[in-house]
Image (tube, rainbow, N blue to C red):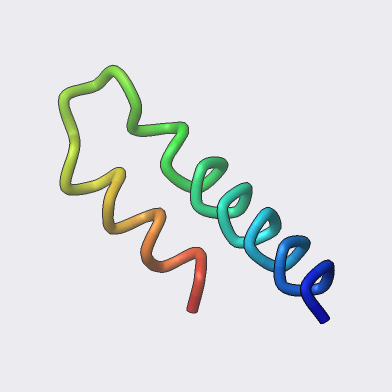
Length: 41
């Protein structure tokens, strides 16, 4: 159970990072935040 939770946490974190990556460095913090949030729906 603990291992499954750790893997799920890693999966969600990776999905959020990949979704926000296109906005990083462009001064679009809100867009990056929104993309990360939407990736975990």
